[in-house]
Image 1 (cartoon, rainbow over the protein chains, first blue to last red):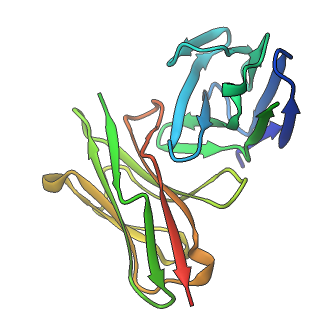
Image 2 (image 1 turned 180 degrees about the vertical axis):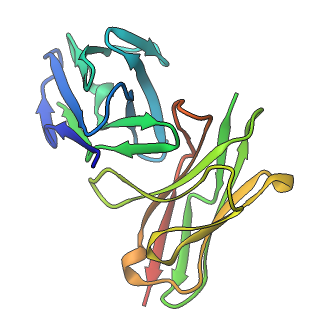
Image 3 (image 1 turned 90 degrees about the vertical axis):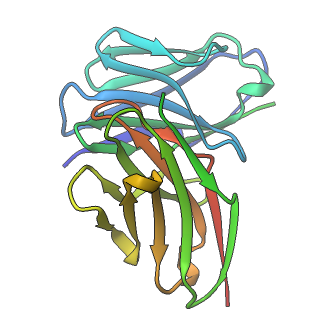
Length: 110
Length: 112
């Protein structure tokens, strides 16, 4: 069966520090992968999506970047975190009519 | 461009009462529609989805939704609310294989 792993579950980072969130998928090949950010009262905002290795599309200009070094691995990064980067980050994969989400990472920038 | 509007950011019902969460969508192509539930500090769990088959879709935990093309709606209902239904609910729209576009969510509160 298909599963999606996302870590860490929670993270507290100081302003200006780097960030790396990792997402891996099992049980499927060549999935479309997505990073979303959820802020209170604002729903889920699509940040990045990838249709294959090395292919990244950005939906919103920001302080973050994404990479897909392997077929089933999707990484969200930042060189220097801002306070406004705090939020709940969700990784998702999509194939055909199915869409599954990871358990999320609660990022607090202090 | 696709979009989703969830009417009511907060809905309160009594235990045993009907649950109705509203969702209207905009799409230039036949859409795929989803409802997800989120419990605090957790990911999203799929409740049900519409993928151009039956217009009345039954999901988990007794929820169902009806796709009404003429009204561009996909409202979520449950005949009798349970305390465990208290959570945040998201409606989403997409085309096949593309990113899901979400509404802003509706928080459901259930009182005894």
